[in-house]
Every structure is written in C-alpha cells, then in structure tokens.
Image 1 (cartoon, rainbow, N blue to C red):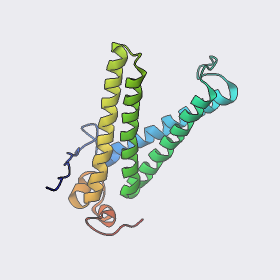
Image 2: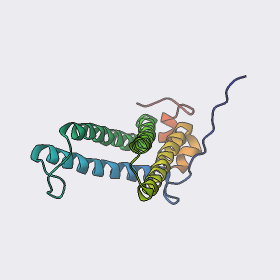
Image 3: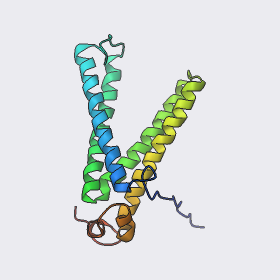
Length: 175
C-alpha cells in the first residue's frame, strides 16, 4: 500500500481579520525589529558586561554567543520571508515556516528537559507554544496559497499576475 500525504488545513486570514500576506508581513516585520533589539542587547551585554537595565550580566560568554547566532539567523530568515512575501516568491516563506516550526519544537523540548518548572511556567509555555504554532500555521498557509496560485493566492493578498508567475502549479518561477 502507498502512504497518503497528510492534508493540513490552511488559514484564510491571519489573526482572523487580516489577509495572509499582510499578516505575515506584520509578523516578519515585528520579528525583524525585536530580533534586532535582542542582537543589540546581547552585543551590549558581551561588550560591556551589563544586562538590559544596567544590572551585571550573569550569562556565560558562550551562552550569549549561541543565543546571538540563533537570533541573527532568526533576523535573517524573517527578513528573507518578508522580502519574498513582498515579491510573491515562495522560497523564503517555506524556509521561514520550517525554521519556526523547528524552533518551537526545540523550545518545548528544552523546557521539558529542564524539568524545574512549576505550574505557572507550564501554562506560560503552553500559551507561548500555542501562539507560536498559530503564527507558523499562518506562514505555512501563505506559502501554500502562493504555491497554488490563481484565486487562492489572490485571496491571500497577492495579485493574480504575481502569484501565477511564481506558482509551480500555474507558471514558471521568476526568481
């Protein structure tokens, strides 16, 4: 017997009221801004040894370096997704939703492995993971709409011409 692919439902709107394209552009824009602020904060911490509000830093250098590298990756991938969503190209959107899904899984895994959490931390983690997964679903839905092209992409906020020119189902890639 042949395995059937899983058919994942897609969102029609982001945050229940915005076109998918606009919602993903807002999410990526916020990610770029906040990742940039975290990068500046970590660099300040590494260079001057102080935390965000002036308290001494107790983070080991190597921990800050790993967090800095991951944050720079997040910044770059959010920028790529933003750029490709504006151009109606699915590549950066695909990479970003896969990255965000893996990031949520790793975050939950590290939380479980840590094992020193209480009930309130557990509830916060569930809420955080749920919101993150919803945003991943919106980004995935935008990618699927762009891949389908035509009216599906138009409903997501793309012009039919842009979406059809980059959709593997409707035409050739302009990349």
